[in-house]
Length: 196
Image 1 (cartoon, rainbow, N blue to C red):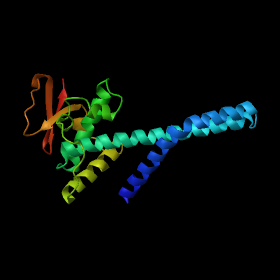
Image 2: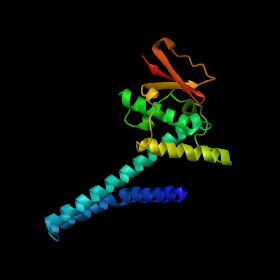
Image 3: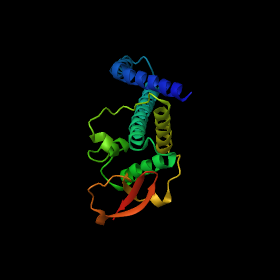
Image 4: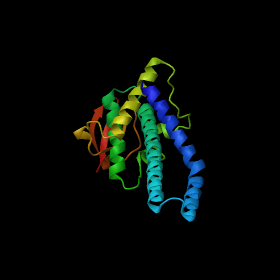
């Protein structure tokens, strides 16, 4: 059911983008002709403009949500595919904390795709989830579900991670200035820190 919904959403978004690109100028020209010829009352033309503006905003909002969902899902998948849901939520919370605490990002994708922040972005490998087997498919589906909950503010944040903006795998030893960080805790296979 979820795959059908995602597919239909993709079709609607695709249609909306094509509609906007191909017909926006034509619609504007037709409205201008109608205004010039006085075929419609000004209030009717204004109503049409309001409806079309609303439609374009909905299409744009849906497209932006799909983009945010995709980059958040990929980040959760590539950073924490083998983690339990709590581990994926902790990573989503770090991305959210960075978005809200650092004044240089406009959206989640800006956080995810900032150079040298997430290894999967900088590894020069294809950034497409490999969902050929049941384990990877389950990990991808969990990543999409957590990303959707996160983007819709429908998840419980871990109060201990409210200030976490950094993390690494328990086996990794990044070259960080640990004197400027406070270790908070480990969740799954990641250790979380806050910047001092």
